[in-house]
Image (cartoon, rainbow, N blue to C red; front, side, top):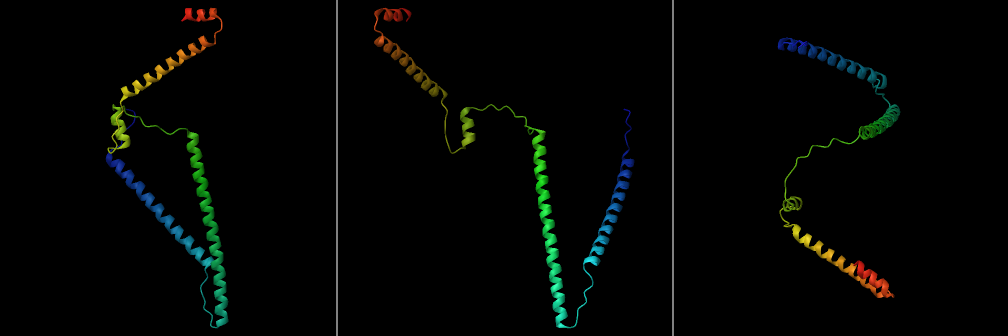
Length: 175
């Protein structure tokens, strides 16, 4: 409660003052940019005086073409610098993102959905696929039975290879 609340009229007055100051700064900046442009044009583009003879006109054209070439070279250099700096900025932004760590993961909602509904949502309504989990379990049971038979084969092989009757009896007693 130590903070004093500002009245709406006071807030409106301060806001209008800030806008007036900002508008004055923008106008001053625009005037300065116009002066800078005018000064640059005076330095680099002198007044054009058309000569009377054909030779002087050709010399003037050559001179203007050379100036155009130099300006194009400067423009190309500036564009390449801008492209290079933009690429560096993007690379640095990527590095900063990587250094910050993982992205924020949104909180996921729990959804109760059957396996059939999930497959239908993933594959679309055209495909009708049903997951019969019990059929899969029966297939697993059949595979387990085959493993039991393999164990029986193992014991049968030992009986065939056992040459001494004592060993054979020892295995039969354990089993």
